[in-house]
Structures are given as structure tokens and as C-alpha cells.
Image 1 (spheres, helix red, strand yellow):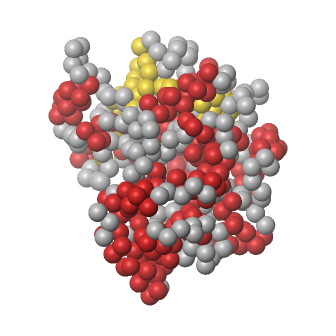
Image 2 (cartoon, rainbow, N blue to C red):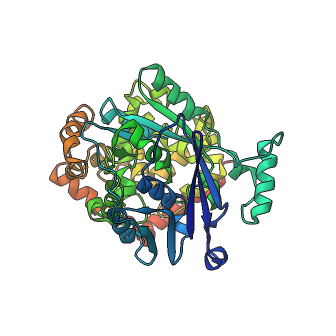
Image 3 (spheres, one colour):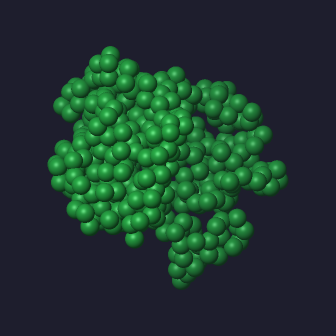
Length: 453
């Protein structure tokens, strides 16, 4: 694949020319559009060639096969870091005289901000000078006088790859933009950056799980950024969320290789919530002065839809703190949703540990909720560890931020004891379906869900 860059005012454009083999590769996730743009809020000036290359890699890298050739030479340091991530791909050209972007000494972190609970918890733990970068999905370029939907239909037909459906096309960003406006009104720095990079993937979505960093990367030099942060939680990083066993995040390639990759452009990882469960992040977000702006809704509505799996789980997590559980009618509406039914019938359930925590606090009488409580062993297994953090994760942050992170954590959560850490590490539901009792409880829950109209 050959990658080109183009600057037009505040817009940064990327072009991707795949080989015939890359075009014909059959996979569940494949290359859609061969171009993407990012509309920056102002002219950021010169952008380091390494930053442009890394941005392009996070958009189109997953679709590159045997080679990835950039329009401009990249530093030897970035080339080595990219080769560690994608060892079977020839990457270049290398400009031996190019110095990598250095990490500024008086910089500040940048947070890839979504406006959800985990992202808000990260905001509360990061230094006050942290700047937020919200990626807004916008439709690909359209002709003058052409509606966005008509333009998308034309582009999709021309590409002959993009799936045509409104659910994939439409994604409201109103809640996130409203949150960013509230941050700006409070004197914080928050940017809303539009891009069509999600259309490079078919089906539409982030081509790479770190594609959301592209706006932050492109603005890093002009904003004097020295670290990149996300709202990534422990269930994802340490793999104890559902169908996997505990793994030390610091030893996983996704940390080792990608931290080195971002460090090559002066932006080491600073993940403030990665050592804690969604239980802890939800409680931190609930205590935030911005709590009323938090939206984790899966259906991307301005107000919570109160029908999707995220609204269901987050509302119940909030109930464990406030004691204000949904009414029987509200529970019925949740359990009637087809997506919620599908997710709760799985064995294991995604984020089963979180449901075990929720169920351990539920003392109500809703019959289907009681079936869920029995299924996830609510009240039978230890769950206190989910309100604390893994002490060693602080060492993953840049050395100059570790002390500040530990101080911020002390305002909200405590470190895990050895016993807590033992409970965390032994959490394993990968084979839970083999337990006859759990299998029976799963059948009972499935029947109860099917009975809710």
C-alpha cells in the first residue's frame, strides 16, 4: 500500500493506494474508501513526517499486506517501532537524517475523549492542564447541493465495498459535543474534530482500535502534548472482562509495542483508569461535576435511550451507589430489548464481573433481575476488588506523571491489597458454561428474558 498526504487549509487528507492483492483480500473487515480527511480547528502549522505516517498507519495499516510505503521518509526510530507492530510488512522509506519528534519538557497530556463514564473518570484523574480531543464522525466529501446521505450513497456505490445502511452511516455526536462545550465553558480545552476516517473500514467503524488518536496526533506539536491518554478500563487491558484470563497489561504486546510506537513521536501512554474495573470508573464519573453530561449510550443519542446494553449496565452501576434501582416497568423495558436479551443470554456474559458486582447489591424482587443475579452468582463471590485499583499500573504512566496520578487516585479509590489482587487474577469465566449449575441458571435466565414482551 502506498500512502499520500495533502494539506488544504485546516484539512489534512490521506490517500491510500492498495495493491491488487490488498484489494482482493477477503476478510470480515476490509478496506472501504481509499481516502480520508481530518478537519482541524485551526492551521496547526508544520506536522512532523513521523506524525503523518503514524496517523496514516492507524487509519489504513490494518489493510496493508506485504508493504506500507509513505509519501515522505520516516525516522529510523519510528520505522523500527512500526516493524515491531507489523513485522511481516516492509515499511518505509527511512530518512536516516530525520530526527523523531521529541517529547516536550513542559508539555501536557492529551485525552482521546468520548464523553462516556470511563472517559470522564480519566478526565478526573488527569492533570488539570490536560486537553481533550473528541473525534466526530462526518460523512465523506459530497458534491455541492448534495445531501450527506445522497453523497454517501454515491460514494458507497462508487467504492463498491461500503455497506449501504443508515445504521452504519448515522452516528450522532451531539452528546459528546455538548460535553465538550461544557468543558470549554468551564475553562478547559476541548476540541471537536471532524473526520471521515471511519469510512476507510468496511463495515464502518474505527479501522484500528487506536484510530481515535489521529486528531490528537495531528495537533500534538501545536498543543505541546507530551502524552496520550484514553479511558481504557481494566477489563479490556487486563483481559478479565469476560472470555479471557487475567493478563498483566504491562507485559502484553498491545502495551509494549504500541507504547514504544507512540513514544517514538514523543507521546508515551498515560492510561489513568487502565488499572481499575468499570465499577470504579463509574463511581468516579458519578462523583464528577460533569456527571450530568456523561453519555455512554450505545445508540449515540443526546439523551440516554434507556434501552441499550450500555444504558442498562451503567444505570445499574449507578443504582449500586444511589440505591435508586429501576422500577419494575423500567426493568421490563430493558429486558424487552433484543440487544440486551442477546447479550445477557451469552455464557459468559460480556463484563460478567460487572454484573456480578451489580447483582451482589440488588435486593429487589424483579423476577428476571433475580434470575440474572443467580446466573452471575451475585452475593456468592467476592466483588470488593472491583472498587480498587491494581497498584502496579501506576508504573505504566510516564515517570513524571506517576506521583500526580497516585495523588489523584487517593481522592477516589484505594489500591488493591494482596488478597484483592489475588481475587482479580483468579477471576476466570472462560469455561463457566461447563458448570452444570451455571448452565441451568443460564437456561432459566434465557426463558425469563423470552417471556418479557
